[in-house]
Image (cartoon, rainbow, N blue to C red; front, side, top):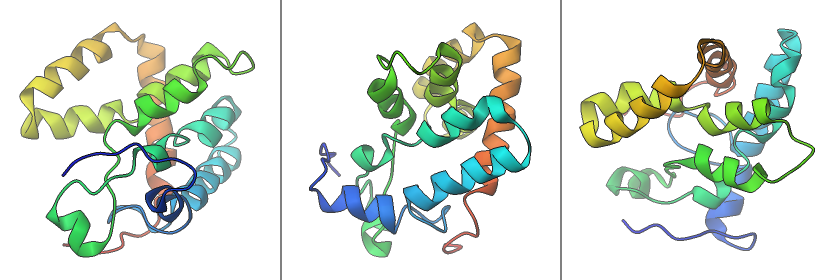
Length: 159
């Protein structure tokens, strides 16, 4: 399926923001984001607060119907949404470099585990990025991913 660039008036933008993501998310992007923020505050992991607010800011712009499954279940895929999110915030002077790194790489661990099986070329590209990150950032990305995963809620479906 072809990808289009969504904008503020596109159906995919608003539907993914407010209602539907994919089978892994119970809620749309906005409620998911607020749940990540809540989890970060509850865990007193305040260094993640701004990243929690911004980590999926690019997701509604990246929403597209990737395959027949997306079409059948009226859901979306968000390939490379984290890079889209980073591109939106990268020049915001009031957001620190640490937060920008968390936003940019927050899905990298999951991407590595998926792409090693599904797309070896993508895996090699992502592995090069991972290898350049500091151990501290890698640890923080693993912790942030837990907050992100918990905020997904229950799966919408099993198939």
